Structures are given as structure tokens and as C-alpha cells.
Image 1 (tube, rainbow, N blue to C red):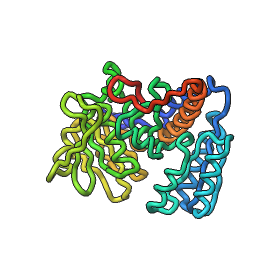
Image 2 (image 1 turned 135 degrees about the horizontal axis):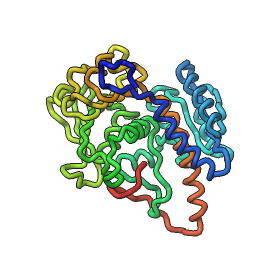
Image 3 (image 1 turned 90 degrees about the vertical axis):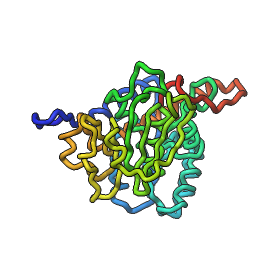
Image 4 (image 1 turned 30 degrees about the vertical axis):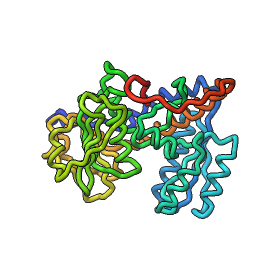
Length: 333
């Protein structure tokens, strides 16, 4: 909470939100009866990646998970991933990107076995995410895995009660208008799609302009659609938005706070401070960083992967296979 009594804005720290997610993880872990094993693969010399790897290890061990790190040359990353896929002792694999910092990284993402993909980057998970398919089976037992950072933002919005729990799962952002400043394939575009699939009207803003992600009037459509807002810029949509989420990587970018709707909720997922201090003069809630939520979501994904494996074993006598469950009345991610 903000210590400045002159402003009504509350500053919510990621660690506060992460505690609830980790508590949920602990409950699931106690029922599992064993420690899931996460393999980290570090194939770059970026000091920030090493810090993240150390942070991952510490959080895993503090919360009852096993973690091992393999530091390899980038040319050995492919073989290391394949070895992890074939190692029965490994439940999940996390690669610290970028490795090659080009399209070859996309190839590496796709060779991580889908049953060990804690980051939700494999084709099946990405397809499910954009198509608003929430389960891997018709029985709605095995849940699809979502990318960690977009899911972390969703968990923050749930914590802040931006999601309306009275409405059915899948529709709980109905009536909300949200702005996402970033349309990267890693976070910004997936986040806009997820929010729209949950019922929000989302304005996705980047240097090329504005797109609107929506499931249509009355959220009647099964999944989101994207509409180009020709000639629009941030100024055209920011003032309409209940929530503004930023993820611009440059240290020079600052969101123009005079564009904020009074009382808006502001969330920054960039490693840089996208909002200047004046944000507290207009926002009702400000979340300046989300890192600890992201790492707690990673552990949640790892637990879910193991739970999915257990569910698959339990239904192994049933030869039928299912891959679809969509839209509004399903359980949440």
C-alpha cells in the first residue's frame, strides 16, 4: 500500500499476490505426495538470465520442488532439451531465452515435449490459447498450460477483483475495457487474446498502431477476433480503459499519465518502470512489477503438468481422445 496519504492510490507488490498462488500450489503439492522436478537450461551469457535461474532455483526449493540447472553452450541446447524430454526423472523443462535470439529459438520452443512444457510455448498450447480451448480432454480434467507472464497478469487481475466472480468462468471480464501497451508475440499479443477470450474489450497498442481484441457485442463469439483501428493511437483509447497494462522494454518509455481514466488500475510487466511517479495521482491501484507472480505461476504450471500426467494415467483404460473444450462456462485457467 502507498505510504503517501495525499493520494488514494494503493501500490500492490507482486510478493503479496504471489503468496496466495504459492499457497494454492502447496495444497496441490501435498496431495501429490512427491516433489516435481524442474530442469532449467541456460545457454546464454546474459547475467539477467543467470539471476532468473538462481531465483527460480531458490523459489523451487523453498516451495517443495526439485530444481536442477544445466549450463550449456547454445549449440548444445537442442541436445540438452531432447535429453530432458527422454529423462523420466524430469517433470518440466524451462529454457532461459533468448538462446540464439532469432527464429531458431522458436524451433527450440517446439522441441520441448508438450508434456514437459511449463512455459506453455509449444504449438498445441499456443493454438489452444488463441482458439480459447481450455482443456486437453473432453472430460475437462486435463487443463491446457498458459504462458507464464500473461497468466501472471491474469492472476493479478483476479486478485484485484477485476474479474467478476459472479459471472461464469470464461466471461468474467465482461464489461471491462483494457489497454495493453505491447504486442510482442511473447507477452503482449497472447495477453490481449486471453483477456478478450475472458470477455474484455482489449485495445492492443504498439508502435504500428492500435488493434481491438474482442469476442463481439455481448461476448457471443466463441473466441476473440482482432480489428484494426485505422488511424488510432494510444490517445484514442487510453481514456476509455479501466485497466492499463504496460510492457515496453525501453528505459526511455513512460506512459503519459494524463491519458489515464481517473481511478484506472495500472500494471507494469516490463523490467523497466513504464509508469512515472505521477501514476499514483490518477490510478486507484498500481502494480509496479510482476516478477514474483510470474515465478509462482511457473510452479503452478509445473504442478499442473504433473497433475495432467496423473489424470492421463487414471484414464489410460479409456482409448478415446479429446482435445476441445471452449468458451464461457468452462473452468478458469
